[in-house]
Structures are given as C-alpha cells and as structure tokens.
Amino acid sequence: MSRTRLILAAVLALAVTGAIALQTSALGRTSHARAHAATSRPLIGISDNQSATFSDPRFRWLGMRVARIVVPWNIVKRKTELGWQDAWLRAARANGVKPLVVFNKDPSHPSSLPSLAAYGKAVKAFMTLYPWVRDYSPWNEENHYLEPTSRDPQRAAQYFNLLTLLCRTCNVTAADVLDISNMAEWTRKFLHFAHHPKLWGLHNYTDLSAGSHERTSRFLSIVPGAVWFTETGGVVWRFEHPNSGRRGYYIVHSESYAAEVAGHLLALARTSSRVTRVYYYQWRVPHSVGWAKAHGKLSWDSGLLRPDCGLRPGFGVIARAMGHNPSRAPRFKKDRTGDCIPISPPPAAAPPPEAGTSTTPGTSTSPGTSTTPATTTPPAPAPTTSGGAAAP
Image (spheres, rainbow, N blue to C red):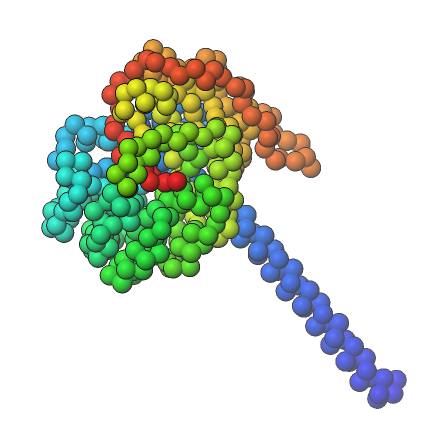
C-alpha cells in the first residue's frame, strides 16, 4: 500500500472513531437527561390541619409521605390549640408522614409581630417538644396584606435567620409567599436581609386560576435554590374578603374546574427541576358551602374529598400523578360523628403485570357519590389557619 493510501486510511479511521465517540457521548447525555426526568418528579403531599386526614385509609392508600400544618407562632402557650395540633403531629408521625410546620400570627393579636426574643423563645420551646420535626416555615403567606409581615420583610427575614440558627439541620423555607401583585417586590426586599436562603415556599393560586405560569416563573427567576409549592390547589368555593371595605361574598366553582386546576398544578411543578415538593390544599372540609353561608365558620374548600366523604375528580388527578388507579381507592361514607368510614373492604391488589406489558396506571375515575351536603356536625376540629384568603 502506498504512503498516500496509508495516510488516507489513518485519517478515515480517526474520523470513524471520533463519530462513534460523539454518538456514545450523545447517547450518554440522553440517558442522563431521561434518568434526571424520571427522578425529578416532585414529592406530593397534603396541606391540611385536620388530624382525621391520617386515619382515612384513602390517604394511606395514596401513600403521601409529607404533610403541612399551620400553627400560631406561640402555640406552646395556647394549650387548647396545642392539644389539637399535638394530635395532628402525633398522627402524622404514627403514619410515617413527615410534617412541615408553618408558624403564623397569634389569632389574639393578628396585626402584631413578636419581637425576635419572644419568637425565638416560643419556637425553641416548640422544637424541644417535637425534636423529630425537621421541616419549618417561619411565617405563613408573608406578603399577604392581612399578614403583619407584609409591611416588614426585614422582620420576616430575621425570623428565617433565627430559625435556621435554632435548627441548623432542618429544612427551613426562607419565605412562604403568595403569588399576588406584590410578590416580586416583597421577595427582593426579603432577599436583602436573609442569610444564604436555599429553600422557598410558594402559594401559586393566581397562576393556577389563570392557567398561567407567569408568576411562578418570575418567582423562580428571583430566588436561588429549591422551591416547594407549600400550599396550592383547585378551589371549589371560597369566601372573598375585599380589600376595598365592601362586604364579602362567596365564589363557587365546579368540581371539574378544581380538577382541571389540579392537573395544571402538576404540569407547572414539572416545568422546573427546582420544584421538589407540592403540598395540595386540602384533604376535606366537613361542611358544604350552604352550611358555611348559614353559619359563617368556614371560608374555603379545595378538598380532594366532598363533605360527604365522596371522591372529587381532583382526587383522581392526584392519584394518577402518584401512580394509582383512582377506581381502586377504598370506598367510604360519612358516619354519624362526621368521620369517613369504610363501606366495604378495600379491593384486592392488582396482580403484577406480565413481562413486557405496560404498567401505566388506569385513568378511570371513582364512582360518583351523592353531593347532598351532610348536616351532621363533627367534633370540634383543629381550627384551619391555612388557606389563601385573597386568592383570585
């Protein structure tokens, strides 16, 4: 073989080798991207202050492992409420559910912010009572106009800084904000005083009701680190508190609308790998909107269950997102005390699929149940201090 042919053969061999290397690298990147997508699905939990949630076998059937509760910042001094919240915390722990505890205003002084010394003393006492709680938010919906922190982002940041010092190994959200008009400005002011924030909480009701991602994307562009959707969901009805001084009024949506919103929420969470948890608000409200209008003691229902314990379409959306067929959920009814009890044993587990068959969960919904509001008054539950009161 001539020298020229030897050189050409060598060049061709190098080109083939390079092409193979590039193809292998591309395949490697594709595999890595697919693996990342498979493992970046956010963890789905519930935000609900009712301890009965954990005893509902449909909650156990879903397999949720995180839940959120909102308590007054000085809960350790409020003995009656502490008893309610203690029942919730211990029920969560008994069922293997990791709690996210969110501190909030004192209902007796809703317009006042505690001093750093008072806040730190109360929070430290709470942590001493519950050393196994490792997830915290310093304050609920800090930019909401009804929260005193909305006028003092510096103090809100100081609460965060203090909480991270009191529990250096805890997950602490830097701020827990609602996606209303002041979100961006308030968050930027907060950032000026916060020490090395790496985790944030967002309630994106505005985006969900508009079918948008605008404010969620804006929030992600402002803050560093991971983001949890710490409270969000499809609202069935709520009581609107106008900021203009006008009388309040009820806004009622269909259950299908709430389910559509739930689907948009999950799609929104998948748009960024930085969104690592979603806390759906809420599990179940014990009374109907008619009861609320007559008694005035409830202002919000975005439950996955109806007051009569039937499953709403939104439950199916969440169940499928967690890999379950909602038609196989245990069947329940409401008993005379207001709790959800089984009306038949849970169906037997489906046999494992044969090799080569699809394991995609079914898409059928659970059988509809009566929507007639129950009138039985349940035992006094823990007061629900959560809920985006100003959500559109």
